[in-house]
Image 1 (cartoon, rainbow, N blue to C red):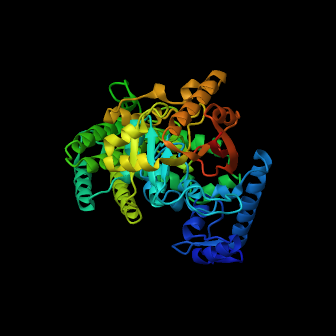
Image 2 (image 1 turned 180 degrees about the horizontal axis):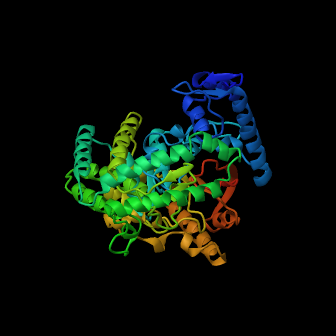
Image 3 (image 1 turned 120 degrees about the horizontal axis):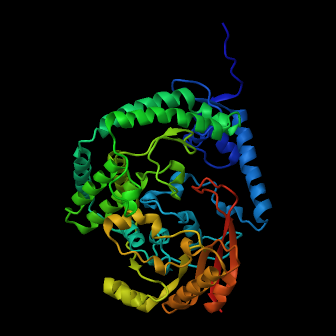
Length: 531
């Protein structure tokens, strides 16, 4: 009878955390270690709740990952890369703290970057502070509202402008002050009616059997975390093995589709909701929206709409690794490069709506403990032409009087990058469902216009016009900070055209990207002042 010889230096998760915290000189949690195990970065030992890892494995991983990564990135992107601004020591739970994860948004910056430039600290890179409590901050490309939320945390007043109505709705839902008793009540009602919604198409029975088959199949062919470890150490060719097992499981999947007579496609293909959702999922979405319309309190209705939007984004018929950039509808089971096993499309929104509803309440409560009574406002308009004073006057006479007297102190914003994102299209599902008017033609630098010379010239003109218009409402000695990936060196021209000069720039690595392309990537924070 053979016995397994375990290596020396085995420790439990808590001991591993203590060791790693001391080794890296920053806090490492059990979640961090569990992540490394789950994704095969270090080998797991022990069973039945007694998980252990080898200190040597941990040391090898951290030495190769932390030190070499900075070296490799600087080698490819230049020694002027400011690694301090990578925020690589920040845990995901902190970079997505409280309301910052209320709704997905492609292209947003992490809150710590905003906080770094808005707060009053100084260091060897940021040698002076630029803003203080009580200042008014403008973000003319406000997106999902990260800058406005961080300004509020710091006791600053903030104005966000964005051409997308849905983007402003996300921001509003984050910053509104809620009656939590009413919110909990309405969320509970909507969760219950969605859970009770039934169709006569055997989906629940189908999914129960499908999940059972998936569990057995994945347990046999993709044991976790060992399979992930084998992929990480290149013992397994993921592409070949994954395709083989996908084809094998598709026979099981197709037989279940036939057995329960599941309808995958909808009857029409006219818009996003028709194309990217399995029939039962779409039926549940339409039902949930009709129930949402019955809510009387406008603030509650708005946050419920955001919960539903977040839900239906997750329930699109696509692979997990293509959530950020859709390719083709995925209506069958498939090998998932993200989870390293066979996954399936979603046939219902019930689980995800309940999960996101509960998560949203928790996040709003967390933010309510630190939110300030600072003024804030969102404006859905073209930042090249918007009359900021006039729009604020419509919303709040008190904020308007304060704004007239004090004016905007400066800007912190991340303008769109040339030819990378179609900002309306990334939330096409929400525009279809809620009926918001799309203004794609007013986007600056959208993906559909490409990255050619004409597109770049149009981009320079567009960003410069935004800055020129913003100057009308700012103090004379303003400070403008723009986060950009300026690979075509457009910002010197933008600054000149806007009557500004670049007085400093901070180059930072962008580490935590959701796409499968993990090539080194950087962005620059340009500091502009009056020419």
